[in-house]
Each structure stands twice: as structure tokens, then as C-alpha cells.
Length: 591
Image (cartoon, rainbow, N blue to C red):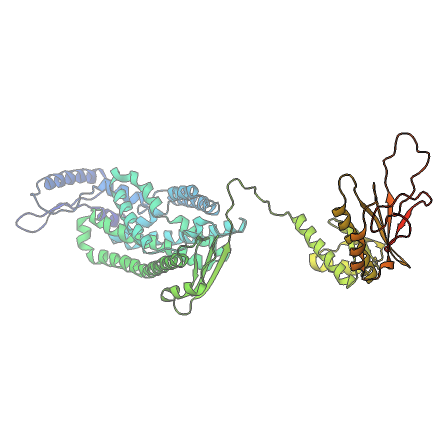
């Protein structure tokens, strides 16, 4: 084995003179002093030969044996003592950091896991072994990668079991849908990693390569999603890991050959095996590219459908004041759209016709339109009702329905209604007491809570409504006569002799009209008007006059007697009677 590795480490600088053919100088790395001297001499000869290359000649870049040993040691092709223990410790720690960062949805922790992960070394070591046609070393590197892959998945699965279950974080979902772009990133990052490994002056770029092409986080996502019960997501994450792995191996193999890591003598003798290794890596990369390309094509198609659907919805809204709420969900032929605004949405059939060319004739449209009213900036904010308010309103509605159900046509009323969390109290008034058990049953059915009902009963009887009695014909006639008399008094009276109608009454003999004033007026017109309104003969109407005087401060010795007024003139006062009757016919006394 040491001899084979030593032969593999040889360097053969070549130059292509104008005359054609290769001029090569070989040197071998050895640990003996004589070999070291030979190596130094060969290196000097190689340097001299390279400096003598004519302008425009082609040559493979020079990699010194020391650089080659450094590269192969860093990639574990030449393993150091204790490297396996260090590798296991670092990959375990990086997996723990990655799984915690994924569960916490923390990009910073995931990036930290990428930086400390040692898995890139054996992957690039596999590429170096393929480039140098070291079969047994390539097998060992492949075994290291496979064992590391299985170990990280198992560790993440066990750790995920101890974490609380919930929705999958965004950092996890982001690694479950790879596409062709991930393969391109893997190729570029693999080439950059291989080049930075060969060139010691570019080693500062390796951390960026580790972040660009992540290996540990996708493996942790596989174990995480398997434990959560999402095998389809685990499949996507493993596809992402496989794409990165194949891209790094293929790109690294090519870069290691181009940069001169493979000695020219070994490259010339092992060309078929090197070509076969590169071919296998390329085939693996192409096989992984097929599902990634299919995913990318599907993603592009979905993006096109989403964009056209969004534009169709915008055209359907048109000038209406409506906004799209959330995202437009498209699941096969099912399209869900939610809009809200002060305007009323257009008919959904219009939108469906717009979506048929995009989704298909079997499009199933679900539109949820909500009309909202804009509130002025200074308008008071109306707080939604609390749970206890909603509960009390519901109970009050059940009580009203209970009174209507129990009362029927009777009038049952409730007062002092008190609604608590566990009981309902109040006072029911009406002609009979309703059944409280019915109310308890209704409340339990409506609210799902068994409430204690304590209703007091106050028996009341409905008041009889007095029937409206229409006035008789005689009462209507008296009202008409009073109106006639009042109109006559208003026309006859003046400021010196105001006339007031005291009463218009009905007697068995007829109708009596009593009037008063300072002086007795002429009553001919009043008598004629009353006879005309009454529709009876003269003796049926009797007019009485009561004089009205202003009292002096000294009490009078005698009261003035009533005076009888004749229809055809004023009569002197009669001192023999307390009041006077004014007959309808001419009086027998008076002048």
C-alpha cells in the first residue's frame, strides 16, 4: 500500500515543444533522506523545465508533492491517527446543532451546523480517490459517507422524538422541495470546494462552500420528518442531499484532474479507470437531475398557473373596491378565492369563465366575498361582545321563547331577570304559572349547560277593556244646540255686555238654555236658530237669563232678582221672582 500511494503521489511536469511530443519529469514522495534529496532535485528540475516552456505551450498546473500530501491528508485519503474519533465527535455535534436549529426555525443555528460539519472532507476524498483511480481508498471514503449518512438520520430521528410535536418549521419545509437549481448550486460549490482544497491560498473560501452546499441539514430533515410522519417530505430532503453529494463528487473529480492533483504518470497509465470513475459520477448526477428537472418544470407550470389565476381574479374584480384576502389557493381543479371590501362582488360565474382556459373546464371555484364598512379614523371602536354577554343574550332569547311557548294567547311577562353562570332568576307575571322544567330543558339544549331556574310567579288578571259607547241621537242634538248657542253668544256680546252660555240641558218638557251677562240681550235670533237646529215647535225650547253684577266691597242688603226678557224687547226687572224664565212665545208681562 505505501508503495502504491507513493507512486500515486508522483508529479510529472510536462511541456509541449513546437516539435510535438511531451517532455516529462517524474518525482516521487518518500520518507527516506535519499528519496527526499531525489525529490528536491526532481522538483528543481521540474521548475527549470517549466520555466523553459515556450510561449503558447499547454501544461497541467503544478502541484508539489507536499501540497498533494496536504490535500490527501485533509481529505482523509491518508488517514491520521485518531481522525475517526474526531470525525465522529464533530459530525455528532454538528447534527445536534442542526436538528435544534431546524426545530427552533433558526437560520443562524443551521448555518453554524454547516460550518462545523466535517462531512465535506470524506465526500471530496471520494472525488480525489476517483480522480486518482484508487479503488480501495474510494471504497473506504464511500463507506465513511454512507455510514455518516445513516448515523445522522438515525440521530436526528431519535432527537426529534424527544422534541415537542407541532407544525413543521419553515427551515424544515425549505429543504423538502429541491429543484434543478439545487443541483447547479451543488456543482458550483463542489468545484469551488475542490479548487480551494488544492490551492492552499484559497482555503479561506471553504467555510463559504460549506454554507453554499449543505449536507448535514438535509439529513437532519430526513430524520425529523420521518419521526413527524411525513415520509414525502423526508423523500424530498433526501433527494436534496443526494443531489448535493453527487454534484460535489462529480465536480470535485473533474477539478482535481484539471488542477493537477493527479500525477501525470498515473493519469497516463490509469486513464481508463479515471474516465470510468468520472463517467459513473456523471451518470449519478444525471439520474438525480431527472426528478429535479421534473420538479422544476412542475414548479414553473404552477407558477404560471398561479400568475394567470391571479391576473384573472384582478380582472374579475375590475373597478370594484375589493381586496384579495390571503393567497389564492389552487389544488388541482379546486380554486379558493377570498375577497373583502365595501362593494358587492361580481357574479362568480364570470370568474369561472375566466379560469376555464387556465385550469380547465372542470374548475371548481369557491369564492368567499365579505362586505365591510369603512370606519372613519376618529370613529369609536366597537368592541366585540364578551363571552358572558353572548351567553346572557342567548339565555334571554331562550326565556322569551319559553314565555311565548307557555303563554300561547295569554300575556306572560317577566321582570327582574338575572342571568348568572349557573342559574336564572326572575319574576313571571300572568294569569297562570308557566312550567320551569320546560325552561331548564330548553336552556340545556341551547347552551349545553344545566342551569338552575328560580322563577317567582305573580298572578295577574287582564284588565277588561271598556267598550266605546256611541252617543245617542239626543246627545248629539244637545251638543249641536250648545254649539249654536255659543256661536250666537260670541256674535251678540260686546265689551260692555259679554254673554256666556251656562248650560244647555234636556228636560221632559223640552230643552233649557241658560245664559248670563250684565244686561239681558235680545233673544229672537237665538230662539230662531235653536228652533231650526232642534227641529221642534216653539214650546220645546226655554231660554233663561241670569243677570251678572260686579259686587261692591260692602255687602248688599238684598240680592237682585232675576229678570225675564221678552223676545221683542227689554223688560223691567221683576222683583217677585228669584230668577226669570224667557219663554219662546211673547210674554204676558213686561213692556
